[in-house]
Image (cartoon, rainbow, N blue to C red; front, side):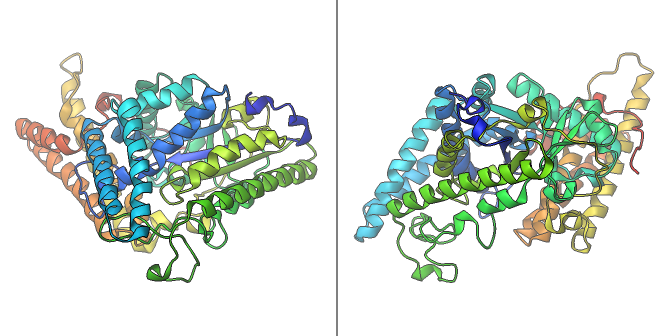
Length: 522
């Protein structure tokens, strides 16, 4: 039975919505280890495979409206890319070989670890070969078509939109929605805005693109996330993440994944690369951590499912009482939390999605919530994000000012070059598609990915992030210089060369770049 039609739904007022945001920057052909494609394959094996399996299992039981799943265009491109598919298959095979090596160790604990990992890798290989070998699009399309999930889209290459030129912002969004239509057969009505970044005026762009709802962080709605809120006069609704419920799961100080029984993410067996330990204690050093015990983890999952369900029930009742009508509670997380960062996360997810309706909680998607009228009065949404401070400091602070300046320069150069090329050819009649212009915009969007500033601000592979931003900026400058110098054949060769590494979004068409976009920011 669908959670939305729980027989006990009258027990708890309102609706609960779970939102997962799936994203990685473009990593194909840009390094392997320690940062690069390995990041993609780890997340794919640990999160995307098991989370999809959980959703598929629940969908087979006839359950609908399980959650809203955001998949960014840049991640979707990698999950469908032939190079990445081949690399993932190789990575899974290597995982099995590493597990086999551990299973032959003289240490009984290592042998148990190897046997457990060998079973897990064999299951992942079978799942990948049977369902994923031709890309992720058919996997998720099956879930979308069954109404098991709502797909949330987003702009190409995950730019921090408030800092992006209005024309490039509009182009990135429309192309991102078109990319989703190409992969899944429908245009998403909802989006996960990159980093939940917002500045006044963006709502009109969403409205124009056909977006009906999007995510912001709780403080953007001044802490009142009990209902979605239309933004000014636009017919687009902002839904806010309920921090009280969301932080129950993912909090640096008290979130579930830090429990002593769960598998420790940071401790490795250096010979095989496998993870043999449990968290044990927050202040326990890696060598002193206890061996992982799956039975202890199972008990912890059960307790945390019960705790989360009780938390949601209390929150729905208290918020409904406070506002005098049935309230909405939205919990939102990165998909990569489930399995990659928190090994037991997929187990918890499946049990929670069963337990909530059994406890009288109505579960639905953001689209369900909007259709059911969980919408309040319009709000004058201000500058915001879900980053540190809930403002823009992660992407616009002093630490990344050089990247802010670089992004502005690259976008300006790309737009000027493409505009001049298009103006020159318009007099010839029908405007033909130009791979040079396409690649200029593709590389510019790669350069302004929000990931690079985030990684620098958080000091997470900051060198890699700066190198990537400057690499794509160099590609734009190089192609634009040749085009501006009248060396079209050279510009074409350069564009084709860069496309070998960055050939994502083959449908991107520079002819769809809009002209002047009215600036409505206040």
